[in-house]
Length: 121
Image 1 (tube, one colour):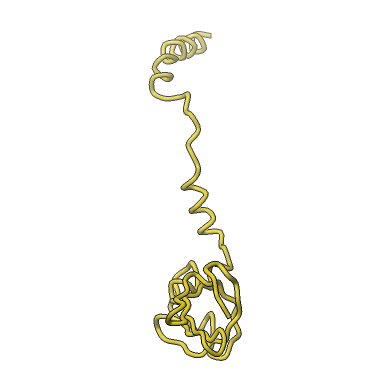
Image 2 (cartoon, rainbow, N blue to C red):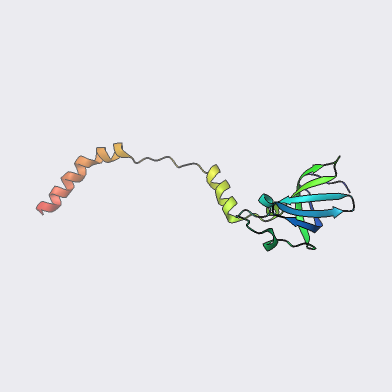
């Protein structure tokens, strides 16, 4: 089977190492889910997410046709709120601020006058 970057497929977890999980996609293609592609949060123990023998749904993030090896991701299939917020704030722009020290300074005399009038009343 031919794999393309961005493709979603299933495979069987064949081994776990501290740095990632090995996945057999078919008889001739293997893949690795690096620990950084397991979850957006900190992953201390990969076996809290996958275990040997599990059938997992993964996204292909890179594929070497010559070596018949794939880099895979679990977290790409499960967008979480933290990454969504991070992307949102990066794209957000600040609204134009019409207030500031100069507008306060311009109003200061009027506010002082109003305060004195209220005090005298």
